[in-house]
Image 1 (cartoon, rainbow, N blue to C red):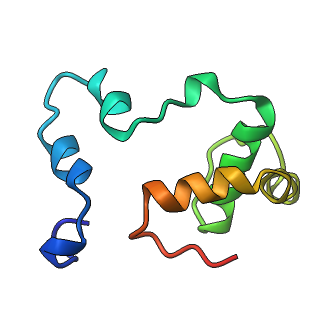
Image 2 (image 1 turned 120 degrees about the vertical axis):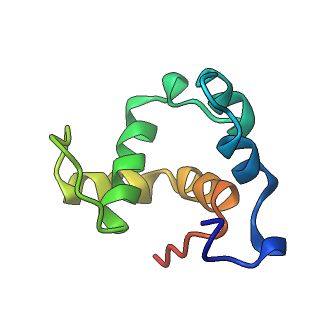
Length: 92
């Protein structure tokens, strides 16, 4: 991310994440998101994003089709993903 993009295009939190070091608890604080409080449908929608991006999901709890349905049912999850990671192109 940092190597392949122009400096003005890189969100500040990427630099913050690089400098976290051993304090992994600060990651959620930096990105202002933690998957701990998600509903099952929100969690399933995140799998929908992973499948849509072509990621290899190890032992997924649902099929790609079910994950896509969950994502369609929760467009707010996709919107939050796009707001958080604007540098990741995710056409739907």
